[in-house]
Figure 1 (cartoon, helix red, strand yellow):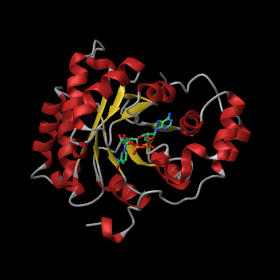
Figure 2 (cartoon, rainbow, N blue to C red):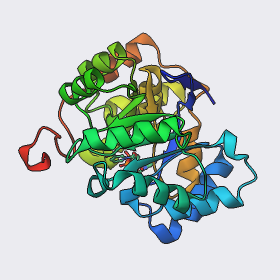
Figure 3 (cartoon, rainbow, N blue to C red):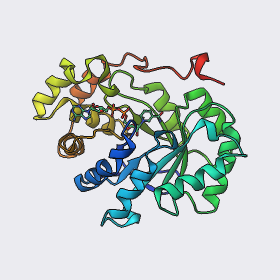
Length: 273
Ligand code: NAD
């Protein structure tokens, strides 16, 4: 595994396993399979309702806790100083661990400054090794960075070949924030897995569309957390460190950028409170 060093020195794997939309009843099996396939970073969230499944898989695994990298996220209903602290303790309980490796604010709505102050306290108390945000577009990220004590280590945003976030990436890099992708395959939207450019580059390297898509992000200094409930896809998505995309491959994939969300925009007034 390759690692990126966060702004506080913590080492984070460049590739992990995400459990969004993994049925709580199936989550323990999925995370156990992912750990067996070699994944060490597991990305969950309070809003996924499957933290207990992640915890059960961790408890059964032979992999020492310190080799795992566990991320969860504070949901908007737990935002603010009154609720966030108890929600973090609840996540720790469900995950069966006394510390998180990374804790993120899930979305920049509600009282996220209050949430951040609680996360800073959890960080100071040793409950969390690093704190960051998710779905913060450049304006909100820069605002937060300018008005908080502990700088965010990570920003997890929708990032894939069709929405590459190139300008946002530059802002994150300027502020020392590691860019993490969610939805590295756009969840298959826009016929992702049949894209002819990605397929042709894959054929050239003896790799699949999924592997090319992940490799492109890793080579762009973006952490990836693909999701699959199928062990063969978990293994395929993990097998991306034995080839390198060349400059022409990278240019061809950069040209696929539509600079538009395949889901929804966090600039949409409907999503902002
Ligand atoms: P994704 O882009 O990783 O797509 C997952 C889907 O792609 C799978 O359900 C499967 O249908 C397909 N797939 C996976 N591997 C494949 C392969 N090798 N070949 C063919 N098909 C394959 O979508 P995602 O799950 O939304 O994103 C990944 C992770 O990012 C999530 O699990 C979650 O942890 C995180 N996430 C975070 C947010 C956020 O708001 N912070 C939002 C969405 C997702």
